[in-house]
Image (cartoon, protein in one colour):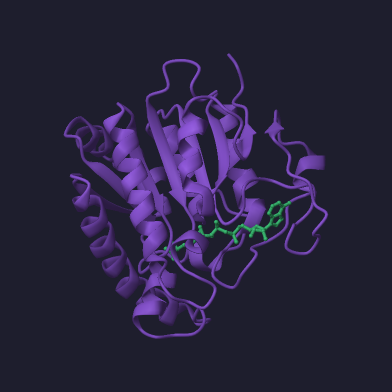
Length: 269
Ligand SMILES: Nc1ncnc2c1ncn2[C@@H]1O[C@H](COP(=O)(O)OP(=O)(O)O)[C@@H](O)[C@H]1O
Ligand SMILES: N[C@@H](CCC(=O)OP(=O)(O)O)C(=O)O
């Protein structure tokens, strides 16, 4: 696990719930903190790939909408506005900490088609070689898998997308930053007595039965898609951690191997 071996390449996924508030406004504090900590961690010698949700949430904030649009074409239009604004903010915040960022927007076909996939892997490698932080999102204005699908597709939400990116880039660790510090034995928003599960060794039916949907109108997928992501990376021997976006400083002890959030242990070969 983190902190114990030659951990080097980390995929970090951040959810809409960390980048925006429930009232719909952009959480600049969290975006700035994320940029500062990831820049710092990169300075410690790690390679960082950021998978960021938030195009629709940040687009809605920019347009003054009070809730996520429900019609597909409006979601896609809002995502087109929000992706631009989100990258502007990342460029600004990461720039403050001396980093260059880049944008990679993906659809399912980009990963499924061999030639596209190879190009994609080469692009990630070249960016990392140049010390640039790739920031990935689904290409929401073109693809409707993620923003419409629910949990049943192989590709179709940023939790799963981050797992696919982690596998493509042969990452050592996937960190999902959410509005909650891990998987609980029931949804803590509904059950205040819920207990956090510190370590998961395999995604059993019992573990699946604990996962509920998104906790707010801004998040999508909830724990269901996070467990799908865990299943993908664990099968490839990659660890995954769910960590709390409200306690981002805990990424430091996490990388020292201290117990943080819920750790999903990758299969040992
Ligand atoms: N068993 C569970 N343990 C923890 N959180 C759960 C569980 N079941 C459902 N959830 C919900 O999942 C939410 C996080 O997922 P989501 O809303 O999609 O956020 P994100 O934007 O980080 O992807 C939590 O706020 C919580 O309400
Ligand atoms: N691609 C969409 C995010 C969809 C998604 O998976 O959101 P989240 O549950 O916040 O990770 C966007 O950028 O708004």
